[in-house]
Image (cartoon, rainbow, N blue to C red; front, side, top):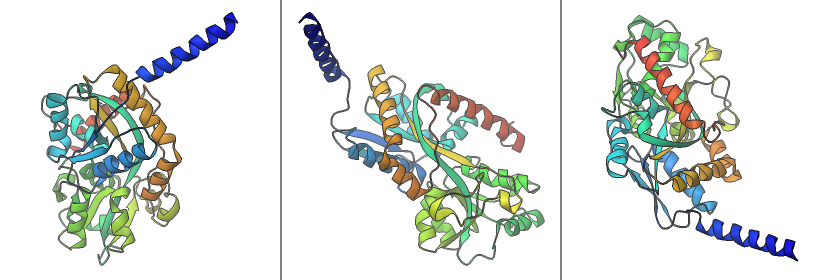
Length: 325
């Protein structure tokens, strides 16, 4: 009888503790540091829908587009105006760590927010319009070798950002000289940058596979190369890698979230667990497959260390290419 009473008390305590655990009620906000379209917008909207499907949020997940300064406006907003908001997530990626590495967010660093988790990686691509004269990556790079100003690129990150770096990494790997001379036009998101290519105003696009899916399916663009170790699975398997074309260039772009540093410990624990649950779900596996994401999810507690190291690595790369002194 005593044992039964103890077990009953323990069960009641567990239920009480569970009921007291923090959970988001009402509206949750996800800031996409860009205009609609592009990778950050995709991250907020796709993850928000999946969080709702899985019952991890009881209310709505509202995506707020906050473009500016390559993510800097949203970063500053989080730090200065939402520093203790338990129900705020902000989409981030390698583009975010690139800007931090290059000191493009004045007075701010990676330690001023809490890095929640990653939901996969999105590999970089080099794409052209359907009627482009360039049939493969080597042909495009040969044009750059003859005249680095001959091919104009567009991307969804600022000059010196991750999209721009992917062009420079690829060109450098093939021996192109005068890398800073390669024209690069910055737009607020990948969708806008792709529109310039489709319309013929720009020669080539540099971005990520998730950004080009719709344009690829409509036949408006051709992807010359994906910057991955090997070909992507499924419907992307026909796209050649840069490596198989003799260019040793890689461009993985993780996608995930940060949240305010001053949020409660309970909220931080909840969102870390929620992102773990979301990532492991069949729902998210379907999203990843549909959009060309590959598995990438550092264990809880290790993501922050990963971000810190990536900032350091990109800073070194930026100095080597001449983007930082």
